[in-house]
Length: 109
Image (cartoon, rainbow, N blue to C red; front, side, top):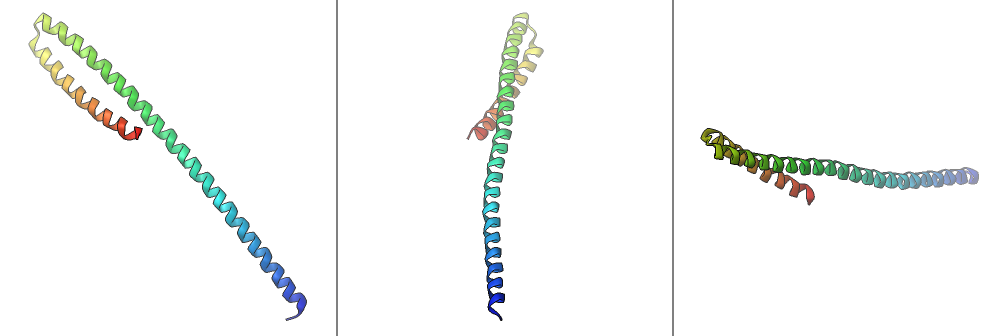
């Protein structure tokens, strides 16, 4: 092999290694940027769920307060069957509240 061919081959190999290093460098930067974007997207989705659970907890608390007031009025008026229905629905709302609190704690951590 002539000296010029060897020099040309070495230059080509150096260019190839340089290109490969640039590709690996770009790949690592792209991978880091994608990881950051995925983290931001997950954080955004968790915040949406977090806000939805918070709103649901506030709504359940408001409904429970309303049920308690209606139950008090019905007990004063003497409607026993309606009070039984309100007690059962109140306990169901308590169970829903505990489930929502658990979901809230899971997403908070």
